Length: 537
Image (cartoon, rainbow, N blue to C red; front, side, top):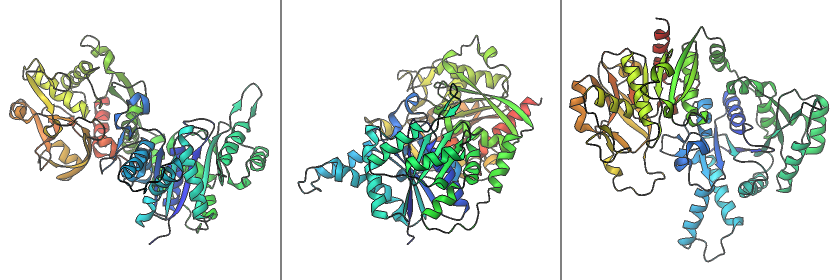
């Protein structure tokens, strides 16, 4: 079995510095050197997972193949590394405490007083090492959520301290991401916030091996020497992280700064096989040098926070690069759409995507957007709730079922074309109880989706409670909306298409979760292609 080595990434001074992107970029470089790498995120909030969190609170909830509802950083990990993550890649304080309390109730601690140290920290250490003990990885990178000094993060930092000591310097490395602010009035970069952050980290018993410094301006040698002196870090381990044009530039920037080389040397691993980012840079080149531009409307309920649709936005970047197109996303709040203003608000769009969501707010606006796309023959893509809205709009306006609706919004609708899944009827707890994870779907012959996927059976990730009501299937199909993808075991409708429309596809699953830099999702690629063709008419 491989001797797994560990890299711990902490953050200081302020949140949102980009620990996830630095971790993913380092992992990409190590992967390109021939090492097998995975990344995990430790989140200090007490929720069991982000599944019950409002998107305004925490952004998108990312779903893995095994049905875990996780932090959106796992999406970055998958998009950069091109390998799937799992439940083991995301740990929360809620899950840690739940596990320890369950063990206490079973008497596993033999009557001992249960304490933060050793019981909570032991559980954290156990979770950190789960991926390493599989024998699948040379290196496990662990990102600690939050900021040094947060009360919530203290048990994690203590667990890291213990593991650094237990593993030894050659088997574990600590990276601290921090901010070097620029004071315009003084015309200077200031190191004091970083010094304080490192001091606080060292008070917790962790001395960083490497400093990654986010900055708007280049760090001169004097600043690096000062940081090395006051932070007890070698000068060549002070890594400059300049603001980048795009997150996909960061692996190249970290390669120039030799972050991967410094990490490998500290862990006494070979530094041969310099990373070759040929395919990565081919994507970047297309992304930065588009031949055309298209306007796509993203109709959503949480558009004020773009992170609520992070994977969709990134999927458009991947698909845009494939088509050598710049995709301008027009973020349109469904709450603000009415039958009267839809023509003016959606005018000039080359494609319309109706996004996922929950609850009844903004629903009629989504339905109005679907109608506009259907009637104006604009390429339409409906995801999860977006697919359900397409079914409702079609049922109301083509079948004449004026009160057609989903029982999520109206439990008493006379025409529940979207209904609660049968196995959800007895569900009381909201967390982790939806239809989650990867499920099979069989594609119909002669369908648009089969020509796009180029195979008959696909597997896609789900996150929903409500489904297409098969009672209305024959009626809907006879009118021209065809179910072109179904679960082979349950007959659940997964995909609908419209006949006599250039590109109209709704999917019950979330294709955006599986789009990566090197494997853009085929549905997004084809949708962007259709939108480009529409723009050139």
